[in-house]
Length: 462
Image 1 (tube, one colour):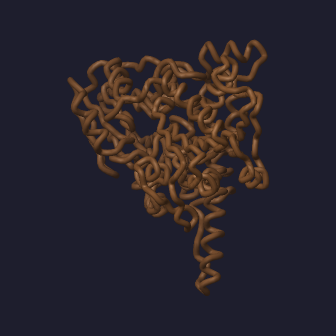
Image 2 (tube, rainbow, N blue to C red; image 1 turned 45 degrees about the horizontal axis):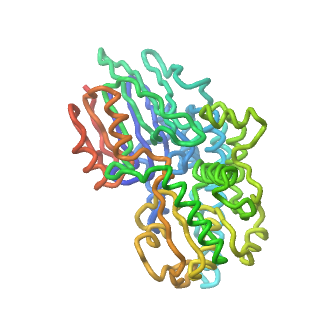
Image 3 (cartoon, rainbow, N blue to C red; image 1 turned 180 degrees about the vertical axis):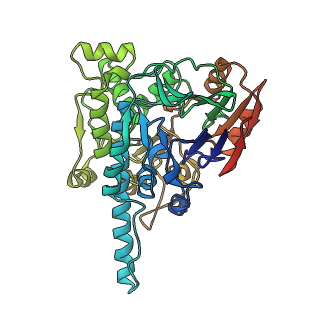
């Protein structure tokens, strides 16, 4: 029995882990690297294994850094099953198709520049829309959380609610080989209790080996209540002075949470009812529709809102901007809230809005999620001035807010509480975090051997 680590090793993105047991090759996640300019090269590198030998892929959730290279996996020979929750399958479909579209557009843009320089047009997308559609044929839904899925003789997987995004799961593998019985628990990405919309993370089962994320292993989030109030205050102050509030937001979960809290704020009189909110993200609009189709994933409070006939994501001044022309027209808007992707400002429509608003003193930019090293969001948060957007230097004069309480990731305290509930696992492998966060978190773990795997490192499990 072997554990192999082929992504999100001593960094935050690109999750890809493998178990070899009996004659089976089981992959957990196959995500894309995100962040700096060299990420395209990282994503084109060899997987570290032969995609054709993988029998089954277990997908924890639908974020790009967990599912983004699945079309490439299939393109390079994978012909097994992809097993996940129904909600994750729908979100992953949306994410992978959007990723393919962006890559095709980027390749077209690069070839246009090459053509103008009289050079050969050799830019190609990592994968195409057709590749993304093809991989959907290999998806299979699990029936429910807490039910075992048979992988083979003496091999099964059980999905537990991770409370991270819609449909997200921890996955427990129960494996036997040559008299060796092991329970291996993969955290995927972990949420935390008392968030809006989703249920709290499930109590994790006992496991001999744990592979867990450490995105926020070195810090504690701001409290949610003050974070919500800070958002309301930022909107009030900015709109009053005639500026736009830009919220770079992840299309999955974060956008829906922001809409939920804005609706709640309006209903309680904490946000003015006439505030105009523009959701300028076709992907986020589609994701919100997927959320509406999966109330089985909601917590009791959100479920009750649906039962009254209300929509927890609907508010009076909400406008959807699907078309490019609608997005461009927002240049003329003043005193509004504009929510657009991407959350780290690495692409998407938010970059255009930053280009037109970042230099305005009356505007504000509210970051409500994680920003990896090298991303435009991190540069702005860290005080870079000016910043470069679409080849132009843009002064940073807008007011910058960083509100950590909205994170969909567990913080240090939540990660430690989750790990403690498992018992005393023999080994704990820390992944999906920067080295500093992993090191800080590892110092808190007791009664377990801690490993921080390097890329493509292999461990024998006796």
